[in-house]
Image 1 (cartoon, rainbow, N blue to C red):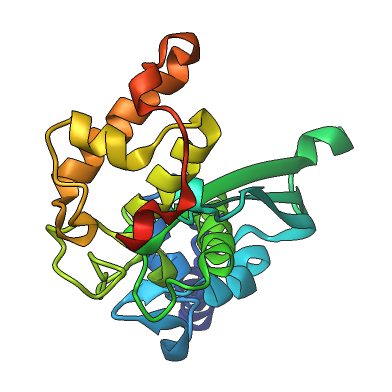
Image 2 (cartoon, rainbow, N blue to C red):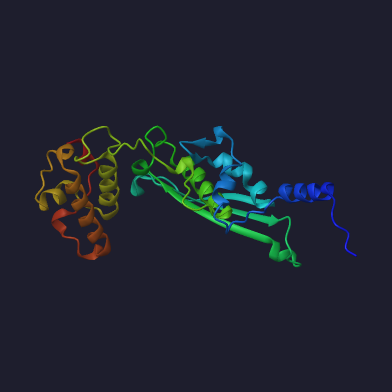
Length: 245
């Protein structure tokens, strides 16, 4: 004879069922909302998670322990690269709860990379490209580890970019371009003014040259760099006073 459940038994069973927590994994549709729901309001900017916030919840969301979190600067700012900084961030972490029996299989690692220069950074931070690149690279590594989809860290968004870092018309030659031309001319022992004249531009009005003119000059210098032996003698003889004209 099967004993029927009492009303109290049914209530306990119902309570246990309703209180049972459903585990959400990275492959579930609700994963993004679950992870972002772990952030405080001050860890979001316009709805985008900050790198600090992602760092705080990383171990909590994945139930893991971070072993290493290291940033490497692979490119430092210089006149030759338009003051670009490139950073790569590496994160290694160990899963705390897994069915894997081998310790090696419990370890995971992710990387994120970012390059920053005046053209993709808010102008208030453009004089600190290394710091911005470091933060962006870490944010991307954290996002990749958390398997967030269609989510961008707040620091990766630049809403107030200064197209012309010199504060002049963006269609004109920039100081970055002038510095780049100067470095290449010196390296190749080319008289910059003679080169400019040979291309049909006005070397007496350097600051009035257009942005596209500067691009053409740089392109010509790049050609000479690939064929140094055949540089025309007529344009040789670097002089550093050319920028003052």
